[in-house]
Length: 192
Image (cartoon, rainbow, N blue to C red; front, side, top):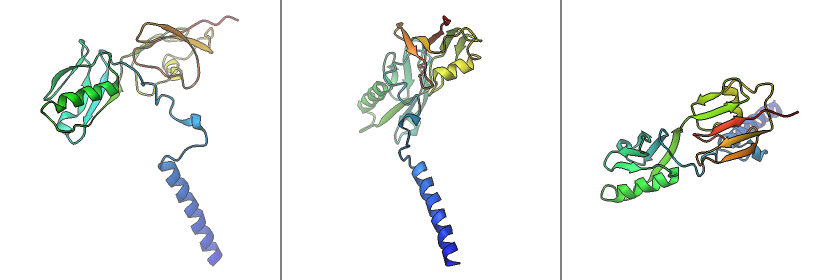
């Protein structure tokens, strides 16, 4: 009976330690298993229509969702209008911190994160080409699924992506190929 109880406790202990290592973010055996778009917005520059969430730590009245207006600006309590067009999220955080230091808060800590970006466009060899709403973590494969999948003529290996800079780039299609807000994705016809 003692052996049976010891075995039960050992099994429970192993299960608990496995649960703890999963919930604390222990490294997975597959480094590629990390979220595909974790770095997809690195270097992304804001534009009109993007929605961001600004958090000023310890100041809930100054925190909340904001939309970049047609002039490329956001408006916040206390500091008014801030030009954010063509800034990264990190630059937006730094700009807001600097404005808040100008007589409002001693040591403000600010974060800005993307909540909803400009729509993206998917064209070419998909069943429902058009404009679709951007969501964080979006991959090209998700975008193709939203557009009703490939047509039978589609090139499933390489696509053409036109980013916010207006430059067309040929990209190898993988399950983790990220989409940025405002991207134009073109699925070309394959040649036998």
